[in-house]
Length: 374
Image (tube, rainbow, N blue to C red; front, side):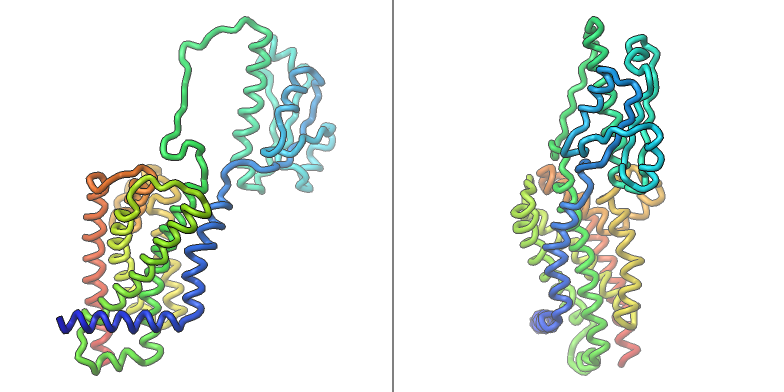
């Protein structure tokens, strides 16, 4: 009981120390509010007022139909330009897309010759170019198909494909981006807070005060883990209710309580990683550089932004040792699909095992560091 009493009061000391760090408090608040909101709402979901110009060299009912198919909010009203103005307007960046309808286009289409339409894309406008290319192709193909069907006897297709999107029927990027950014903030803040707490002790010289007390390295490290983990759990849960569900109106299908338990296991691993990095770095700038090396793989290769199945097999296997990989899978299953413990228990077990390994490694490193200071 005495060691639990010490761990509790050491954790309270960590919370008080964090409360006096204004910059860190502002960072925590912004990471779980403004950053989640801005990231979720700024993801490229669809085109919005993309500038487009059309060179109509056919002047036929079909070309007019294609021109009228481009309208706000996806596109600005098409500008009709002459062929000689196409290249100069693209050079100065007036339009993202320039569509060139060739002469005798309608006649060739009705004759079954399959004429080509030239689409010029300004690829420096990356998000619009990537998404809008498919938009333009689908619009042109749809209008041509409808026009041809009106001039020929309609024939029913043998197969009718009906697409139904599950878990995100409107394919809203806000639903996806908000939860993924919440996960990234949980991982980032938990590592930073514990690493910074240890380095703060060394820079202020209070780590030497702890060494002269009847405290074990296990008690000191456990106090930092539970205190910083508690801060992240409370703020992240509040963010899930206020920002994700409230401000962004993202529906949560599963149990938030089960998600919080999974988050606690994830924090068990990431806070231990923070302690480990805090023993490696000798100053806050060094910790910042280490965070770049550690956080980027955890965020980019965990399956949050890119499906793991599209990654090389070696990367997939290596990232199984990262807690963020299992936490992303757990969060998506619970929050999006409404999965229960009977579905996500392998992720819970993996997070506990990885957290235990990281905790023991960090404890060993922490003991060696304290031994050099004694």
